[in-house]
Image 1 (tube, rainbow, N blue to C red):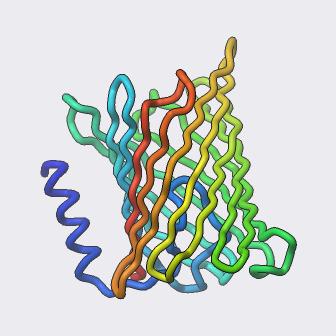
Image 2: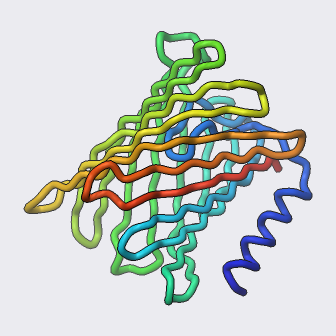
Length: 236
């Protein structure tokens, strides 16, 4: 099945089912302070385009389930295509979030995020990620800051430190506009490289769906030219 047919089937599924906004994303890279409720299940579809010397198209299907009202768990199936190569199943990813307290209980709202990714190609490294979500809601204004650590291993060993930062404003319950900054420092054996991105993000919702779209423009010469992502979500 071609990439176009796969995307068409996924989009039609999202449009035909009954939606809600249990885990509506304000940003495309940054996580806000939120987990889905106990026993709720949500499906999300991601499309990400990395525009660089060799463009990469990545697609993710995520099934997310609330274990408790503060703890949720996700499984991702990740697919990837490089122009001139075949569309392939690339990785399986697992993610867990734990939300401390309730919104407004502390000066900033804290959440712990843990992720593990297993590539299907055994020659490619596995990845473990740990991030802390620190968020503040000031009426319609949301500020979310995610310091993070990523470890790529077996084979090899590479570490990354960085952050995702998002600022958004809810003009209407169906429309949010914001800006995001993403930065990574990659620690190789003999060198350190950095990549930084900055760009807009918009989240819209109607009576049956939510959709978040954004782009990050490379801010230094080691960054990709641009990274573009959109996310759709549905409550199962």
